[in-house]
Length: 620
Picture 1 (spheres, helix red, strand yellow):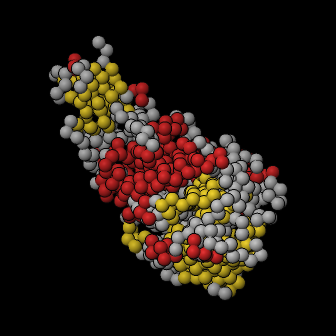
Picture 2 (tube, rainbow, N blue to C red):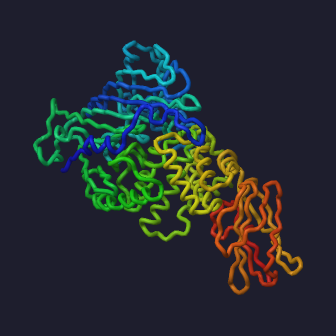
Picture 3 (tube, one colour):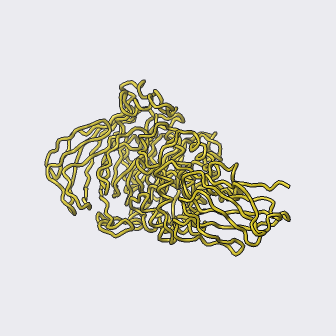
């Protein structure tokens, strides 16, 4: 049984990704003067693997880069959600379509199965503080206010119990992984231009403050850990990893202390188990890809096959988004499905190979869309999940040579089904305020992916691809919001795109264009078009002649204040302004008698909710 710790030297780690408390304070950006807070975490935690309990100390240096003086701070205590009567419990049992992974499982937990996370004492620069635990949020009134540009040191003692695995975090998941330690520590809430982000944990996702983590985990010597950061003490850990000192692990009282450092991240997670196999695959641009999975003959072959494929995903995302900035990434068996964390993911591993590769493609892409481009997943989850879905679908199509003309066609179908269901809410809805879990999921994943795929229809695929790279370069290691993405898209494309962001994300307006009729005027074919949906779009029109040849026409949207680049065989005609419900397209060189059919958007890259009226056949 091979047990190896994830390591890279501190020198490589710090060289690859340095950070500073003021690295993004007072930088100019598309949204004006940009700032973000900064944290340095030092944590020491001791885990009792028999009782699934742990104690810890945390020292956090908090730097206020905002223009405001702060008189309080907030921490997230996520494990408190896994208790009967918690907001997650009640919401999970009262929502119309409960998540089957949660449902009524929390209310049935016994005292030794629940999760909890409590802060027992706290100081600010040595002065005692009073704290108020309110479910999954800790309210802390500061002993002295924190002015702009100042830093303060917050020290606390905490203790927790790992819940039975229900959602993301927990112990002894369905595949037998002992510990999925995610969102396990008191985590500073984000303060940004919108104020404090203190949403309670009700099973959705997360938001965090950028910073550096120095974490020591003391655990039973038989356990192997994989997760965020670079291991600092391989010689002390042993387990046969350090070839020059390949003796038994050095331990006291049957435990080992694992020391990790993670520069410039906004989270810290790990998985731990006695039966982990640990493989390291040397990936592109010097990245070590780590794989932790159970010593189970039924899954070994799939996890071995996954390793070179994960490297192909790394190369794809490097090329099409931007270079992965760390020197390590870990794929860890654990959790209840798939969930992204800093420098790692936890996924269930007893899958077909296609499913295992697919979930890895998605979660790995989150390293770019959320763990480098750190959007607020409570408010703008469609950017995180949608952009990840979009790019991972492309990666799967490329790596597995699937040959799909539109790799995101499934996302289009999902969105259109939601739009026609009567259950859709605007994407500006807070993640916890969706009436239906299904509506949240489709809005975040499918509609979010269509936003990006359809942007290529609006501005041109090549321009859209340039936008993604520019977005990464402009906003990496920051907290971009939808308007920040729009401003990058406008700068790169040269178009006004306010209409696109508003209609797609802030309303439930739909796209529905129709061909109403064909007629002849002075020997020229005239196509009568109608806008039936409230959302405007530019139109690509294909005219098929009786001899099988085709002619393409492009109708720009006036509100774009520009025209996408088209090929020579495409004729650009007059703009269509949104308020006009109809448009007459005159084909100057086409006789009506020679036309076989006309189609709006023949490649179906526009999310028109009623494609039945997009084609007009000419009856003989």
